[in-house]
Length: 454
View 1 (tube, rainbow, N blue to C red):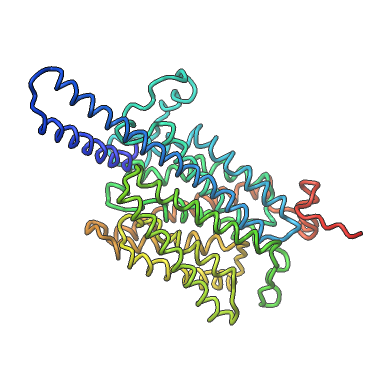
View 2 (spheres, rainbow, N blue to C red):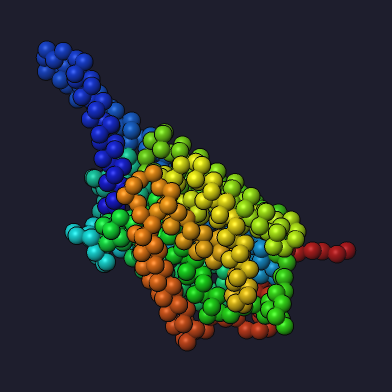
C-alpha cells in the first residue's frame, strides 16, 4: 500500500470518527437503540465518503487516460505527414502495453509494502488479486477507509505508468523501428518506472529521506524524459535534420492537431494532479487545480516571450510547449506551493523549455516534439522548486536534489542499456529508404493523409 494512500486513509478516517463522535456527544445515550443509531450514522457517513472519493478518483483516471489522446495529437501534429500512421500506431499500443505490463508486474514492484524503507521489494502475492481470486472477492480491505477501492487505485496508477512510456515515443519518432520501441516500452514500464516509483510512492528509501514529488515531476515526467534522452542519443538525428551546422526545420503535418493535443493534455492534467490528492477533499483538490492552471498559463507566457526573443517570431510551438512545461513544473508541488509562487514556477519552466530545445539542437540531439525539454528539463526544475517554495518546512532543496540525481541516473542508465541491447540485437533504426519515403507506406501500407486531385 503506498504512502499517499495511507495519508488519505488517515484523513478520511479522522473525518468519519470526528463526525460520529460529535453526533454521540450531542446525543443523550439512553438506550442501545440510540447507540445503534450513532453507529449507523457513522457507517452511512463512511459509505458516502467512500462513494464520493471513489467517483472522483475514477473520473481522474479517465482524465489521465485522455492524456494519451493528447500525446497522440501533439506527436502526430508535430511529426511529418509521411509518418502519421506510424506515430498513431505507437501511441495506440503504448497504453495497451503499459496497462497490461503494469498489471502483470509493475504494480507489485511499485507498491511492494517495504517492511523497512529500502531499494527493492516485490509484492508478488498481489497477483492473486488478478488471477486467482473470485470476481466478488473483498479486495477493498485497507482501501475503503482511504476513499477508493483496490481496482481504482490500480487503474489510476497504471495510467501514470503508461504516460512515462508515451513521453519517449515523441522524442524518438520518425526513425525508430516499431519492434524496438515496443520492446523498450515493455521493459521500461514493467520494471524501470515502477522500481524508481517505489522509492518514493511505495514507501522506499527516498520517501524515508524526505524526498517529495506530489504527482510525478520526477517519478513520471523526468523518468520518461531521461528515457527519451537516452533514445535520441542512441538513435541519432533524423536524416537531413542537421546540415552544415544548420538546423533544418521539418514542418509538422498539422498545427491544429498539435494545438488540440496540448489542450487535451491540459484537460487531462486536472486528473493527473487533482486525482493525486487521492480523495475528493474539496479544499485541497480545488487548490491543486488552481496552482496547476496558473502554472500552465504562466508557462505559456514564458514560452511565448522567450520564443519571440530567441527566434524573432511569434512561435506557436514554443507557446504550446511552454504550457506543457508549466504543467510539468508544478506537478511535483501542486499541493504545497501557493498560487503566487506557482505562477513563478510555471513562468521559469516556460523560459527553460525554449533554451533547452536550443541547447539540444546545438548538440545535434533531435527531439521531434520537444519531449526532453518539456518533461526532463522542467521536471527537474519543478522538483527542485519544491525545496524552494514549499509551504512545508520539512521539504529541503538538498533532499530534492539528491532524489532528482538518484532517479535520473537510474532512469537514464537503464534506458541507455535497454536501447543499446536492442541496437546490438534486433536493431533500432529503420532503413534510410524507409525513413526518406516515410514509415507509413513501408510499415503500415496506408497514409495518414490522402489528397485526391481530380
